[in-house]
Amino acid sequence: MSLLDRVTQAFTERLGSTPAVVVRAPGRVNLIGEHTDYNDGFVMPMAIDRAVWIALRPRTDAHVHVHSLDFNDSRTFPLDALQHANAGWIEYLKGVAWALQEAGFALQGWEGVLSGDVPAGSGLSSSAALELATARAFATVSNLPWHPARMAKLAQRAENQWVGVNCGIMDQMISAAGQAGHALLIDCRSLETVATPLPAGTAVVILDTGTRRGLVDSAYNERRAQCETAARFFGVPALRDVAVEMFEAQADELDPLAARRARHVITENARTLEAAEVMRQGDADALGRLMNASHTSLRDDFEVSSAALNAMVACAQQEPGCFGARMTGAGFGGCAVALVNAADAETFASRVATAYETATAIKPSVYVSEATAGAQVL
Ligand code: ADP
Ligand code: MG
Figure 1 (cartoon, rainbow, N blue to C red):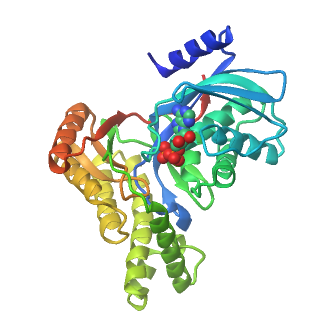
Figure 2: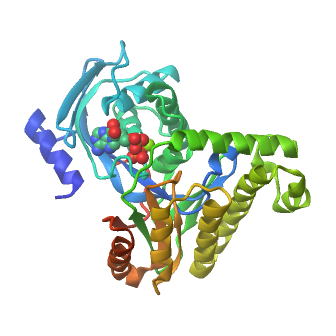
Figure 3: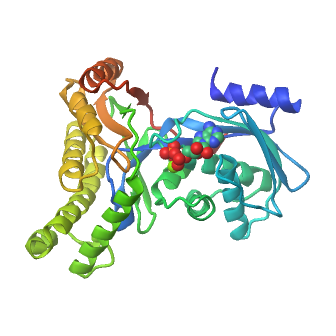
């Protein structure tokens, strides 16, 4: 059963009518542009065909009542007296309500049923999908104007300040503003976006290594600090402002470790802009080469890959139908992403899964995904 049917049917069983509205917001995978967002740089995510869905109807009071099918758990909260509780899925909804109200929006209560198929915690951003589905639900029942970038920023604020997770803007932007068949080139400084077509005849395959790593937070903070140090050395606000030529001219005066970190960010920004260019030309080979180069840079210069991610990427790159592959997301575990010939996608997926399991003794999850629209009302 599709998730649309699942939430609609569960709504009808629990609330005794058909829902007034169903909303959906997708997870995402980043094709290229990794660890560039917090350097004011460029990213190229696409919205995937896995999403959070909410079937709902307005309430006349200022309360939200939600049942999560995945957690088999019902929760309520009052919009006029929001209070933090222990961490849990409902905190994302409260956080969005809080951020919307802080921005001056008057919110209407609603009741509904929620379910999603973005695997939580695997780096496909189920949290952003949940936030944007919630924002879309509130926008619909409260008659708020839907401005994707504005809503993305408020959802990010909810995650940063209510849930307490220090994430960048990429996940919320793509979940809010994705376009079917396209990735989105996002300028993380201006939040300007350019829908960029996936090359015809290609498919995107997400390869989950099945590994998760702790200590990601401290490594992440360390990388951020190293990038800031490098930006100060170059006398610019962020590494976004350093061109490859400028870097090469001055890199030998920089501490060698900081220089490698900076080289990743600076060349990754250039690769991401070039990716947009070759995508516009429909050049899958060139895009694949840029993805391969991104992986090498993340592995050797930025040092955020892992044995499992390297094994997965190597298995993918060996396959004949593969244009390119790289780790995606923060690193140290989680997923890789590959661009493959669409006709070979299913064969590719099963062959890489087998090769990876043989190499690592870990069973991976593999998803072939289309690029879908961002948060929407069905
Ligand atoms: P991710 O990398 O998937 O974003 P996070 O840890 O940031 O991982 O967010 C995962 C959390 O989001 C879950 O623990 C849960 O609280 C919430 N969440 C994700 N999907 C759902 C869902 N289908 N139903 C309810 N809550 C969800
Ligand atoms: Mg998340």
